[in-house]
Amino acid sequence: MAATSFPGAVKGLVSAKARLSEPLRGGSRSLLVLYPRRGGMALVASATPLELSEKVAESIKNAEETCAGDAASGECAAAWDEVEELSAAASHARDKLKANSDPLDNYCNDNPETDECRTYDD
Amino acid sequence: MASCTIHTAPYSCSISRPAAKAFSLGFHQRHQQLIFFGSGRRSAVVCSAEKTVVIGLAADSGCGKSTFMRRLTSVFGGAAEPPRGGNPDSNTLISDTTTVICLDDYHSLDRTGRKEKGVTALDPRANDFDLMYEQVKAIKDGVAVEKPIYNHVTGLLDPPELIKPPKILVIEGLHPMYDSRVRDLLDFSIYLDISNEVKFAWKIQRDMAERGHSLESIKASIEARKPDFDAYIDPQKQYADAVIEVLPTQLIPDDDEGKVLRVRLIMKEGVKRFAPIYLFDEGSTISWIPCGRKLTCSYPGIKFFYGPETYFSNEVSVVEMDGKFDRLDELIYVESHLSNLSTKFYGEVTQQMLKHSDFPGSNNGTGLFQTIVGLKIRDLYEQIVAERAAASAAAAKV
Image (tube, rainbow over all chains, first blue to last red; front, side, top):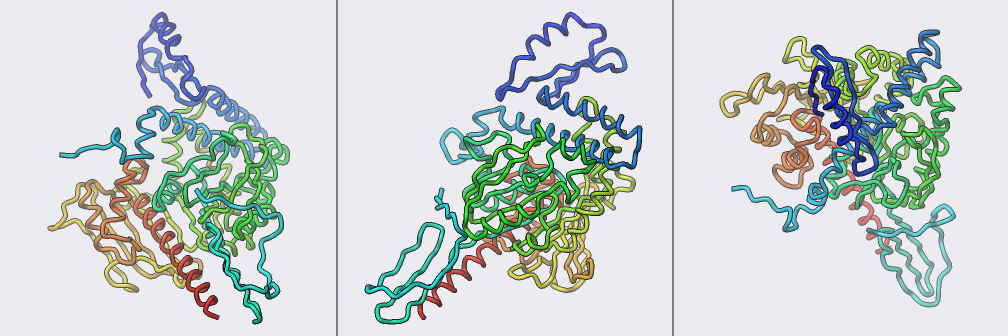
């Protein structure tokens, strides 16, 4: 996860965004998100698939609203449970993306004895 | 990969009539079936069908992709992957010997249903235990099943997938030991008990990168699920054959990062085919700091404890490790002093830990005890196979 803060560098942002929002293998997109940070704006590349990331944010808002009414109700618990479920799914999706990023790594994890994958420690 | 025949009726053994000729059926791939027809003599049919070994794992961290599962399947050999060509959101993992099923697939209510009823996934009302029991029993008896899929991304119940009986079936999820019928089907059960402080620290690490999450939302999520967790999930601890308890370290005062952990492996005594590991002298109480003249460790060091205890009115043995491994030789040193590990060669635990050094917990007790439990399960499986072979050999002599 790369984070750079460049105060007011909106122009640079636009071009970087265009480059980075190409779909990754697997059909998920890298989302460039602007966070307000001390000293300017920080650019963070979130590796969670876009729709999942949005679902998580939505569910948190929903849970906060539901619990504002009655914090001890079943609905409140169910709402936060949904947040937990989606956060777990998002975390798994991130791991999956990381794990699938290098085809050679994947192949060698499964077949360490093949010629391409042998390592020699001197 | 071994194939499997699909039986529509429950697999059962029956006595058949004597035939004119005597012949014996050879071993049918994984299903061992010895049927002897004696000519002129009373026939004896011995059905020693190779029943699937079923392991239950109770964990709160989602299904099938957890580190424990990956270590476990690695001990048996081969990497576990989602079924090819099926639903990409399937929670099932399949390797050569093992199939891992996520118990979330037995949700009776999908996400919308639970929202309407105001019920969490932890609540038994959201799960179909009858179906769970029926299908696990069927797989155990060698019958393939069409298991529903719970899609964690959409929150819906997807069309079922076919699960063929493997050598070892692992059912992982929130309620493997909740229903007593399912509990009786388990050959071995494990409960992963993460303490609240450690859970909080881990969830912060997991979720802070997520847009929308804040410290408050993470805390609120844990707090809101706690009542249901304490009421329905936590009590399963008492039924588990092995509990891995993860606590904050006692070596660093006020540590809240959860990087150094105190992990306790609580093993029930008297469990069939399971010999608890021990330090130095079985049944005694040992306090051990391996760091000293022979082994140098960096801060905060490593501390071990072993002793008999009582856990929910069960007799147990506890091996505890507090601290973390920094170097290979610390690992091998510790391994050489533990007994009853069920390793096949000296250094197997270390080798397994090194194989997955990128997994979380590889430098502390979580990785160590998960690996050891994996070896114990392998040992249990091999004992079962040996017993079956002996039983069918003995019956064949009759």
